[in-house]
Length: 375
Image 1: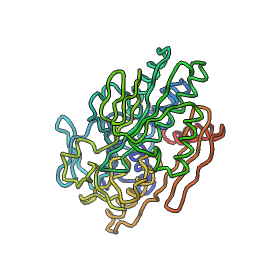
Image 2: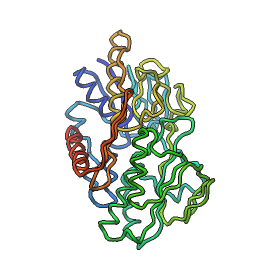
Image 3: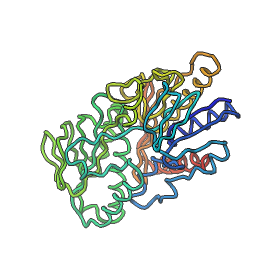
Image 4: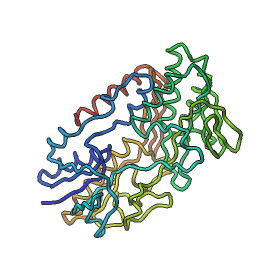
């Protein structure tokens, strides 16, 4: 019987579980994560306005694990031993495997001075609940919303959700009749925000900001945050609330392994999701994969990589060479609480569809449909 360990209960980890169980009914699967739950990140954008609640975002996985005969090990990984055949947890817990899939996500780079003054929405439910509470108590003022990347890892950026928080907040304040009391400013070191989405998308996003009377501060390196300002090389942005998404790097426990790393700190992988260690694969935000700079860090991409990693892992365990690659594509609906803008990009082109109510409803419906398999 094959002993498979999966680290992480996010999109990549759970997709790996489903694919593995579909291909192998008898494998012994152990999944390690702090809690037996999935945080559905795409729905975090609706928490600040109250359009989504905790039950819409956090999905308990006990029933899912029981149905698929998965042993969940609650805990935090601290390293690997025995060339990847042993996973180390706290309290001297060791879990052996025949093969390992790492899907533990990334870590936000929080080195900027004063970063503690900013809320990072994609850190999870508590972060967006804090955002909700802060906005609810504000009678007006300045709100700065922005993101940055990892200069050494172009793909380790998650800017899309910040456009959604920006447009969603504008919609929320208008619906509450309070928009005229707030100044919204979008900031990023990039001269063309959303460039990874394509030129058409950049124009659409900037035009949407202008239409909504949102100011933008672009192309200036961020130097620091203070309680009442964002400081950049191009000047200061006065603010009463800062929402900021830093770039990403690898988990700290990667340092306690022999895994080859990219310059940006992620686990180096080939096109088959293989790492430098035998029978160790990676999927999602943890990995640095060959591909264009615009290759996204998003749930859809993590699912595609997890499928390839699982197929290749089983092939290798059965004495066959890895041969499954993953499709590189960016696909998202930039939601604004009542409308949505569809953006896609592939190796051959892209598509942008303008804001409409139907796309907002499609995003809500997709989330419900996607989560059914885990409830």
